[in-house]
Image (spheres, rainbow, N blue to C red):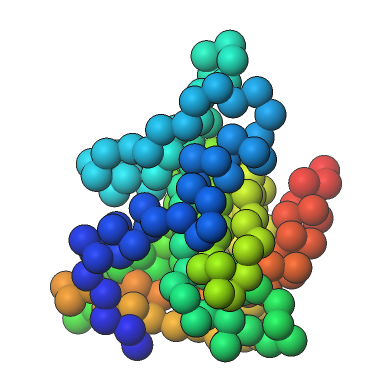
Length: 178
């Protein structure tokens, strides 16, 4: 289990992997005229960037950045996405808090999954509600099939399952079908 400090993780999440995240967002979504990094208070709500379209609509984006070296754990060289099952694991009789991937109150429109360029220069911009649906549908299966890891912030523990990006993309495709 890794030990992480929130402030260190926040600072790490503002760095680019070859291009700035503002550039990546602007290049990925058409019609964007401005991309702004949110302040620390908004960032804690799960919105790292707000993109503004030509006609004024805004898009909330949550950046999910993996640390350098994560590719050594990937099966068959396929990038894995860290999907959070628990933001706070239940502990000593305390109720836990569901992970961001399951959070129905989350105001995020897209999640952007990026990596250190030493691992891959691929970036995945995923529609959050379809990702959430795909995750709920496949949660038990994915926990049994893929690595589950915990992080320790010092005051609480969180937990993720590491699912190959190709599997997540296929699950989102299926989730989009009515």
